[in-house]
Image 1 (cartoon, protein in one colour):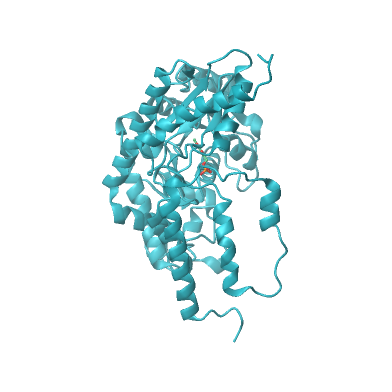
Image 2 (cartoon, helix red, strand yellow):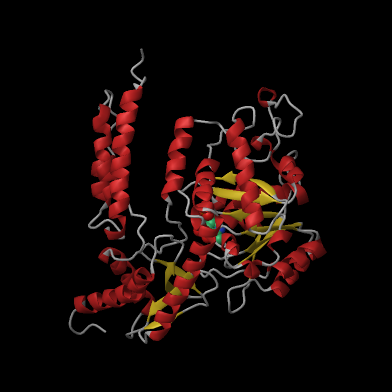
Length: 473
Ligand SMILES: Cc1ncc(COP(=O)(O)O)c(C=O)c1O
């Protein structure tokens, strides 16, 4: 027998140990520092950059998990960085079960239950965000969903799969996520083919500027392909005017891709803020953000599956479905850039069935409320200045309690806040100002947790002023 054969009893014992270990960790999670204390690159290299062992360690291999967990940023209730969900544990159990089951979610004939469940979950998501009738697939995340959405757009408006890329222009606002120019680069259109349209005072795309940019390109013989509207920009959570943008796309025959990776799932809680979403040709969502799923769960929805086929169907004979049945002949690889695909839907399916949609709606509502609570505390503190309206759950602000280089001071405050380990926040540029940014996409967060943001920023500023040498400004 090969050494790689694991006895079932050994698997059972290891899995029991791992369950206990992870459950203990979850129990301690609320008390853990929001960032591992005194961590350094040298230390992590020392611990984890060793050579591959020729002989196996057996169960002792698991001993290092303790160090892995200790040197990782916890999914703390006081984590407010970037746009990153909180990792709901039923989803983690789903990932575990999916790995043991080891399906390849390519096509129904390879993974009958997995494919059916993924199509079901995608339908649930489409209905939940008011896009009934849309289909799609789960992706690695929002960036890959944006790439696939724009690939569909390019193939629909400036086909390139057969003969190569011959131009094409994409429009988005100056607030769009970095994955949009990255997608333009990967699709062979190039960064220069992205027009960054200016935004209003609430960081929403100015549609008159969009129209002017399209007309200018048309006059110059360019081929406008797609407009990317952002439903929840990364920095401030602003929602572009979806209906007005959809009207412009109609007028000029352009593809409308909505990047809803951060925000679109908030339509479960505040649907009125997302009117026009269903007019998208393609829409990115990120269940690993605002459905709190373990990392690696994005989604691309689209209104016309034939457009996905035109972009992605390049089947080899070895993969042919061998069935005309609409269920049994279905293949995700005909509608996706992926062939081998994990059973991503299992975690989401388990999680949604375990808690029910209403629990997610309520949790997102609570995140939105807590962001308002935080904004109010910032507004009430004279040493802090809020830098942007709070459209969803991202709050951008800065410390203004002393004179000098405010941007440099706030950068130091951010580092000090993270070092103190009580809350984790990140940063953004608001106009030309460096902003501290707290984003609540976290099912563990309480009102007490968000109140730590203000007190920790003030305490960090105090720490820094205490460190100054006499005579410093
Ligand atoms: C608006 C927006 N789009 C796309 C992404 C990229 O998503 P992912 O990190 O899942 O690739 C993000 C990430 O924060 C985002 O905020």
